[in-house]
Image 1 (cartoon, rainbow, N blue to C red):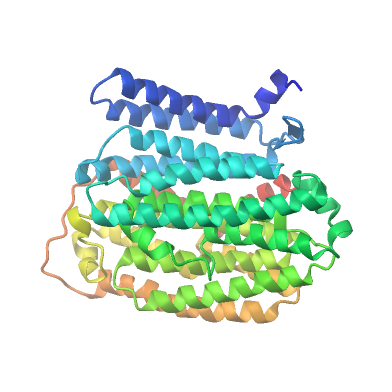
Image 2: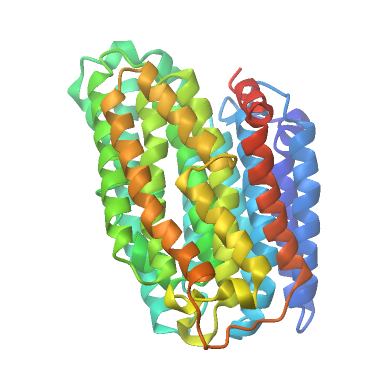
Length: 474
């Protein structure tokens, strides 16, 4: 078995990010105090790789013996991952310097984790999904404990590693069962021929175990218990990357495997509907009682996983498109919100509670305005992209006769307004004598402004992104 140059050309975006990571490794090995150089090289490498991904977006087919999908779906997600990585790297520099952990290894781990995410989204074979998942996860385990002198960071890394390894066991065993029954690990072959195995209970056991593994990665109830502690203990910029890139990568794999109309798939639809309902209810209700903003956003992340699972349960074209639109909007909302937290956070987890943000509008009007917009988009208020993300997945569920699930989603969105608007009220209608002064950084402000601009743009012209998304499913 030999592969040719054409195979290499089909994965140029992945090669670009991988080469960038290796270059940064060499920089770190060759130069002392090279963190600033690693920072710049990482951003330049990612920008070049985005260009390569855009160039090959219209390509279709498979490569490497039908194990990797070319262009389209995989490239769409790859662009999203790389944009999230660039934004994360930009907001990380000042944060890492402030925390005393500005080391070049951080950028290497972000880059390699991004490669893992790109592998997952471009996979046409379960083995490639597993390779990508492991590469992404191992890097994130290390990043979670990057502030190694802080107990909470160590705890977050250990919890994430132990529970993540346990969940990966479920996933791998499920893949083994599916391979044993179908004699293939090719996703398309399994989906197309699922009618041959629909009567076999062991087939659904395998699918169930795979679903458990991915449900852990997307933080769906009841596989969500790691999220609050890991999000709170990890460096804030790492949390931003976890909540966006890692979640999007897991959903990319979930959509590939489960967003199809299976023969006798009603039981699968019922399971996905229960996961979605439980995630929306528990995520939103528990978020109400949180005083720490990172923990609130962690439970919010669980709730948003539930909203996206509504689109997956619908198992129709609008549901698939809705999930991709939602993930895009959610990426910019989360990067922005956690970015502001990282700017205002001080040593030893200070300035992370709701009370700490009292009067922010008078001290930092730009940051307060940006945070307010992100909160409104989280709720799903127009004209922001968050509104259309929810609209599309709910519309897909109604078309699939899951009206009861939409009712739960709408009610839980109303509940979420309480804790999101609570932060807005604190910033604009409460006063505080406590100092909350931080130096302004043009690069950080640019990331926040671009995120808000994209949320506005996608909210006012959602058809632009939806057209691109519909094309990647062709």
